[in-house]
Length: 369
Image (cartoon, rainbow, N blue to C red; front, side, top):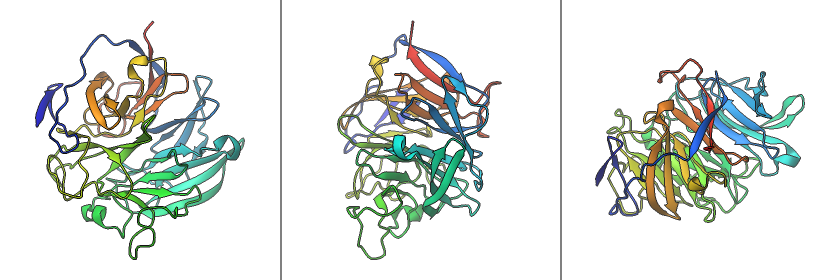
């Protein structure tokens, strides 16, 4: 079933794909947009530490910080073996749930072997020390490299991986490409993972059948994991078919067997399918109180589609959706700030956009005065 939204047909799926939902009503926004930082180079991920300091990654390999409202001139850390190429480079960033005590910072990036790895460091006043490999040799390429990382409500580290342009790997349980992985904080495999102990199957796997998921967050109240995922790009299937999925233990999300409007028994249907492509590149629930109209809504940046997408939900049910802020061009990172603002970053200097003079930027939504 197709709906005409924002002048583009969006294919929408919920459960068995029988229901369609109207876009949220457009009205005068009750928020203002403020510039937080500018003249950046492809910000990929934004997080906040317990003090409210913002940390973010830039694709060429820099971890940077905004402290007391000001961009720190020098990076906190420059990844020594990063290999920025195409869509990859320095990508994911997250902090350990007990960061206030152990100061552990996790990064995912493409290394010089052209694979993706997840590393852990301890942040000190003199820099990032004690580099520790959490996971390496994740298949990657200049396209479809993933790689979002975050700790879930269960205290485990989750990692999204792309299919590395080899679509058959997503259904191959002997490969960690095209998967969601679940790890202990030291990189070891939790004993309660769904495929632990099965011969020829990687024990890290939590879910499979993914093409290239790049956004991940857990819904307040339910603890459900929501992910955004890129659909085919023409060379591996008809364009469009981007997805929002509720990702659960041991489930198969279908790629490359099913995509777009297709369904198959034993494979999970997306909550939302988007055609033409929006290129969803992040995902975060708004957890603040200052923007009451957005409470517990799910946001993600759109690269091809431009701007932010907002989903209003009732648990597993999609209530409405709307596109926002398309005037800022390609957007990737989005985060709910401890100050109650909603933060997002442009990605107009990634080689596919039309950057403004002060791009790339980190901006935030605050209540309109």
